[in-house]
Amino acid sequence: MFTHAEPTTADVSTTQKDVRAYAWVVFVLTVGLLLSDYMSRQVLNAVFPMLKATWNLSDTRLGSLSSVVALMVGVLTFPLSVLADRWGRVKSIVLMAAMWSLATLGCALSTNYNEMLLARAFVGIGEAAYGSVGIAVVLSIFPVRLRSTLTAAFMAGGAFGSVLGMALGGTVAAHLGWRAAFGAMAALGIVLLVFYRFAVTEKQLARLQPAGVSRQAQGRGVCMSFRALMKGLFSTKSVVCAYVGSGIHLLVPAAVWAWMPSFLNRYYDMSTGKAAMGAAVFVLATAVGMVVCGILADRLSKHERERKWSTAVAFCLICFVLLTIGFRMPAGPAQLVVIGAGMFFCAGATGPSGAMVANLTPPSIHASAFATLTLANNLLGLAPAAVLTGIVADRIGLLGALQLVPFAPLVAAVAFFIGKRNYGVDLDRVSALREQAGC
Image 1 (cartoon, rainbow, N blue to C red):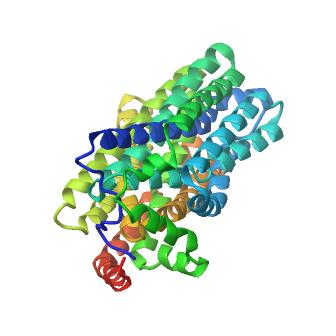
Image 2 (cartoon, helix red, strand yellow):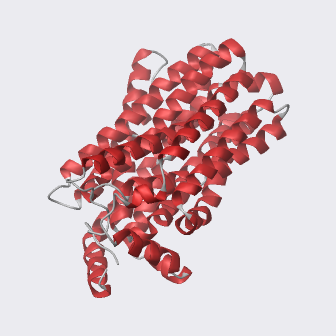
Image 3 (tube, rainbow, N blue to C red):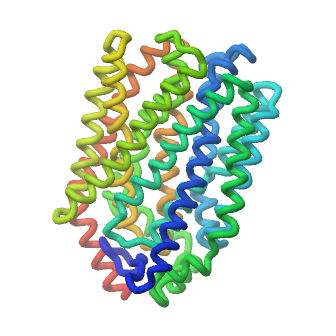
């Protein structure tokens, strides 16, 4: 049931040009919704200074408004993704996008901290399984050889969405207020949802997959028992290391994205709009880095499969060194350049870790596998990052808190190194199991 380059994963037909073109249409629309997802999530960070002044909030409470989204995603991503594998991925995506868009509109209508916290929680519920289900849809209609690149490009959509959320949200907020910023994000999500609803269907996706494979894989996913599902998701040490390493290393972008507007506002005396635009540059660096690192991992591992792990370790170590130095430099252009360089590599292991999860789990449960990866990403990195940084910042200052953040990728590098040592044996073993099962 498992393999490194399984033929059961769709290989887009080279004889049907219309099908190949449609695969890219699906990719663009799916990434488009991911942009909306993260724009709705990250617009909050652009208006942190306004909310702090409006409701007299502590950094801990501000951080909780960001972290509650990741917490909901972490708690619900797995059960909702399992349901999506059974109920239908396209229908699930439509429902999720509708929920986070309406919840974002609820943020615009909030009159106090508790109402905002509740609305943000529903944003998280709507977004909970989108990352795992969306990437499962994308991987099901493209060749296996592009996995790291596609995974990195898809996940980078979240970073680009964060850029747009901060930049556009900050601009709208500066001119029309923070409520209008949330309203703009909600409207965009609804528009993209309408396009996706009419352009993508399960039947059209099935055309992009080899005859008989899609139906067989879906049948296995629907009928698989819970015990068999757990065995498929946690079958090897290396896949567990991919989950853990990916989650921990994402603590850096989550913390820096959340607090960079406030950092620039407090330590560089930038206005809310200017700080949001400045922070968006660092998020953009992360987005570009995710894509470049994903492509680099694919190319370097073309003839040596363990190199994906080596690249993940290298990206984490480079991030640790650059950000440790950057946040200890005096304020000024040089500090921002070094921090920007560190942010380029801070999510570089996303592509390799996603490819490893796909390689070590059966296609029939890829939505569940990526849900598990999303669970790890959120509970180990995305959810605690903003609120923990806020708690520490209330005690030692925001700069002191950010100086501690770069140690997370150092821990992640250890996890990836352990995964590399076990990967060859694990991959051979699961490939043998697949052959025995006749999958």
